[in-house]
Structures are given as C-alpha cells and as structure tokens.
Length: 153
Length: 106
Image 1: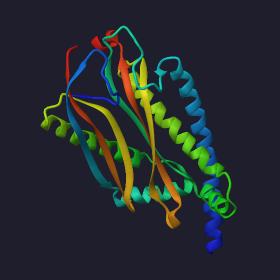
Image 2 (image 1 turned 135 degrees about the vertical axis):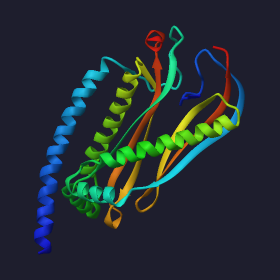
Image 3 (image 1 turned 90 degrees about the horizontal axis):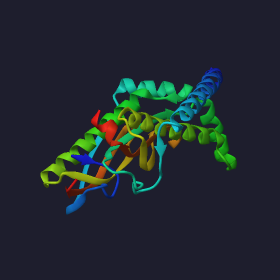
Image 4 (image 1 turned 180 degrees about the vertical axis):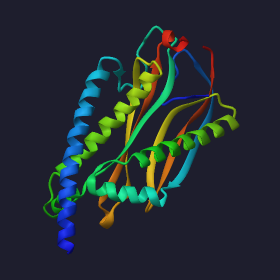
C-alpha cells in the first residue's frame, strides 16, 4: 500500500513538476526578452551621471516556489552520493529570475527607466520532513530611477 | 519619507545622520495555507499564498522601520536591507533595516 502511494506521488510530482517547470521557463524567457529592451538593470551602487532630477524609489519582487516530490526524491538520492543537485539548481534559478522580473515589472509600472543597486536574498522558509528543503523564497530589491518626465506625468 | 537602498541620494545632501532604524515582524501561516503548501510540495510550483503573505509581512516590517525613522526625526532611510529567517517550523521573520538621515537641498 505504502509503495503504491509512493509511486503515485512520484508520478504526479514528475508529471506536473516537469510540465510546470517548462511552462515557467518559457514565460521567464519571454518576459526577460521583453523587459530587457525597456528597463536597464545596473548592479552599480551609485547612480550613473544622468541629467539629474530622477526620482528614486525602492522596488521589490519576491516569489516562493516549492520543489516537487520527484525532484525531492532525486535530491535525497544525491545526498547519498554527493555531487551536483541539478533538480534544486533549476528551482533556485527559476525563483531568482522570476523575482527579478517581478521587481522590474514593478519599476516599469512606476515609469522607471532603470533599476540600480540590485540585491538578492534567498531564504528557505518551509522545511519539509527530515530537514529537506521544501520551498524557498527569493527576494530581489533595488532602487528604481524614474526620469523627471515620467515622474511629472 | 524616502526609502531607498542607495547610500546617497542624487542632488541631495545628507545633513544629519541619525543611526540605524529597523522594523521586523514574525508571521505564521494558517493551517489552510500550510495544507496547500503540503500539496504543492508534491506537485512543485509557486506557492502564491506564501508569496503574498511574505510580501505583506515585508510591507509591515518596512512600515515599522518608517515609524521608527519618523520618531527620530528623519526624512529618509538610506541603504535599506532585507533579511528573512525561519525561526520555527511554519513561522518566518521578516526584517528590514537601514540608516535614518535628514536630507537637505534638492
């Protein structure tokens, strides 16, 4: 009985997990391509020398994602042998890119043309059984610079 | 009140430095959301409820930090940082801190 439940959970996790991940990656790539042309993301701590009159505002984007049953099982196996845990790499990569995208979307909503001083923070917020990573939160934050023309409008 | 994670503000001068201000909040998820999270842990994917909850909590932490900054007479908080930690099973602490300053000129 236990084995059946386990197998069903594995199959569900594999099916839905792969499907959701593919769909998510597609959406991330689309939005990244769209936003890249409209908003500049700068890692620098100091604003570039611009005309002045830019208004600055804190923008944030966050996302909580969970790993699926199948991947958790794979990661559990990896724990025995050591090495790269690929199933978690894609999870964290997706979360990070999603958080940055959400932050950029917020900045764009304010009429900003660039975001500077980007910081990222990752926290594991829900620990599943046996201390396994259940879900992680990624927060991206930075300062949006709104050009004077857009600020007045 | 200006809240930013820059260390300087273009075109404005830091007239007075008032020290560190901080705001924090500890939130727990209710049972329904925990149940949803359990289900999502099988299928994988985004936990929208948690994303919202943490966003709300973060706004709360920021609001508390702002209050503290106002109390010391600042008109801006610079170099804001966030930090998240899970203090217990099912509860998370959201923490925001920054430097309270008085800005002059424009």
